[in-house]
Image 1 (cartoon, rainbow, N blue to C red):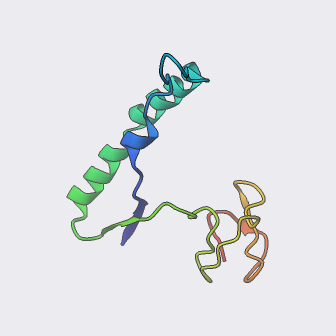
Image 2 (image 1 turned 120 degrees about the horizontal axis):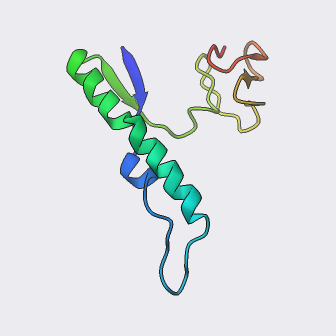
Length: 101
C-alpha cells in the first residue's frame, strides 16, 4: 500500500492578489510559492503512482497528519517539537519525525 496525502493543489495555488478594495499582502512571496508547488508536479506524481500501482495507492485526509501519532492515533498539537522531532506523549517519546512511535 502506498499512502499519499489528498492535497487540493488547485486551492493551495490560488492567487493572493485580492481585489481593488482589499489588495492582498505578500503577493510576490505567494507567487513564488505557487511556482514551486506547480513545478514540483505533486499531482503528476500521484497520477503516475496510480498508473504504476493500480489499486495500491490510498489517498489520506491531510488534516492533522503532522500531529497524529501513527502507532496510537493520538492527535496532539504540541507533539511536534520540530520537523525532525516528534514526542507522542503516549508511546515512545522523542523519535525522529518520520519514524513516529
